[in-house]
Image 1 (cartoon, rainbow, N blue to C red):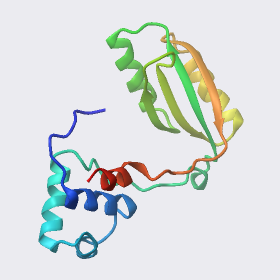
Image 2 (image 1 turned 90 degrees about the vertical axis):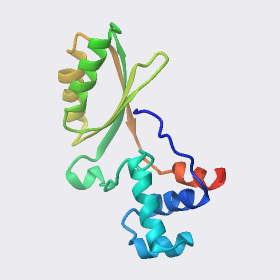
Image 3 (image 1 turned 120 degrees about the horizontal axis):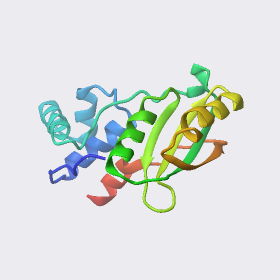
Image 4 (image 1 turned 45 degrees about the vertical axis):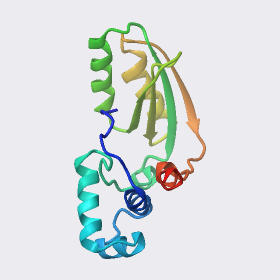
Length: 163
């Protein structure tokens, strides 16, 4: 997680963020119309939101099953040692592994949660054994299968409510 953006958001910014969170491919003219501002204003505001790190990027939401990885899981990991070098090394290692969708560095009993997508149970088992259980930095790994993922309204809905 990077530094907090240093920008005060007004109602126009919040509307733009909510609209882009719903459809990041929306043309600027439609974005401006739906936000109730001129296209030049929408363009300048979105550019400023990017420059200040409020909008971090745009991503395709791809179904892992369509790419041959229908089995998703969360793997809770507890490290054996908590030195900065070991944490950075572990993060770099798991970030590069195929099938890792997201890495969450946590407080509490679990140091990391890995959200992974695999082709099947055997691939998940091999992933855990080869990349986690055999890693000397890992004291414990616990895997939970994901039955279903449903998106919530996200922070864009909160951005409107905060305004």
